[in-house]
Image (cartoon, rainbow, N blue to C red; front, top):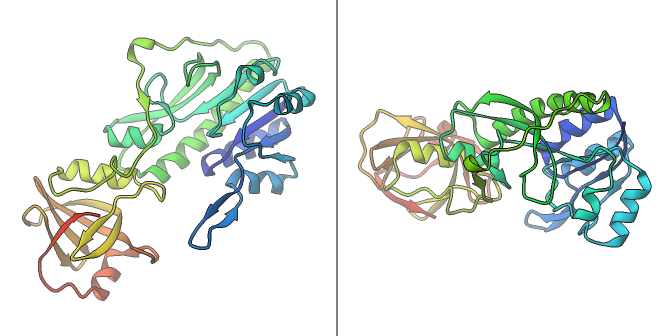
Length: 306
């Protein structure tokens, strides 16, 4: 089939690559290049880089709500528009263009975790299972019927690792659904509105670490953090972003930090949290042992949210 693909971050790249192996991708849409890093240099989104490597035309409109955008999409005559973490709303004028509709690869088991941050919310809320849904888009936010869902265990994965796994299974599920669309055997199942939940964009408050938290909740927050919204702490005036954490059997009072051989121990409300990978402000990620060797911290020190 002739397809237009719309996606922006790393999550969407394996989906685009698998799609291009089996279908004609007429064009790829992604968000505009964005400033990043201290120098604020403009960097292309991962999907743009992947599309250019595949030789597929790339378009980066700031909005799809213009007549020009709709006319350009219509001129491609796509049978399907495939969306995967694009980052822009598809207006009604675009939704009606493809003959077989707009199909979204959503990283949750809809209707749970509709919205912008389904992966992180699954971690923060302690979901045992999550998955992907291949859904038919409509004007509502992730409200359309789905044709296929595939499930995986969340386990102790962090947001990046869980997103990678969901991307891989989402790519295969998408190909399955597109095959059903082609042979006209696809069945769309309406979502149950009574059990719908919304996965709002993650903020720094959502992943903030405080001594009043339980070890379990603190660990989830570290796993759900990212460059956009990171867990950060201040230990004796030193700014650190925990990258990986686990519970520890050590005894330490809440609000106290201690350097140990494996990293940094934090006293939580109900026990101890070991930070065994961390990113000091302005520096690269260190494992706990390397940080401990280079740290000048010699005594128990108060810690708090940065």
